[in-house]
Amino acid sequence: MTGDQLEGAATNVVGKVQDAAGGLLGDTGLQLQGKAKQFAGSVQSKYGDSVDQVIETTRENPVGALLVALGVGFLLGKFL
Image (cartoon, rainbow, N blue to C red; front, side, top):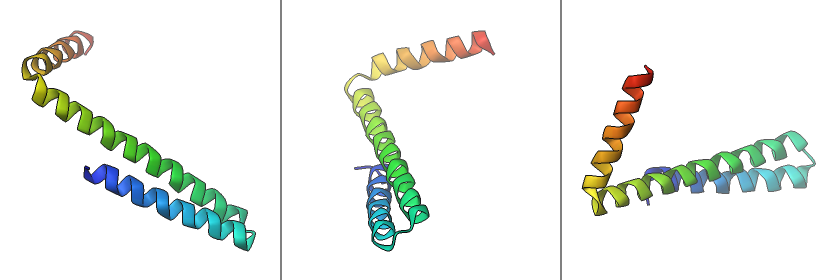
């Protein structure tokens, strides 16, 4: 697991606790903050998953990764 995955999972848990506390206290603002943290944690965790996938693919196929990077660089050079 990467740091983004761990931090995303932790943020998600904090959001769940905040959402539950808001529900118990009847504080809709606290509930909304909790749901927002849950969403942010999920996004960050998915980002970490994507980074892991890119690293794994690059290690398995370095030539392919180099060609993709070359193509992206070429396209960016054309558009900028």
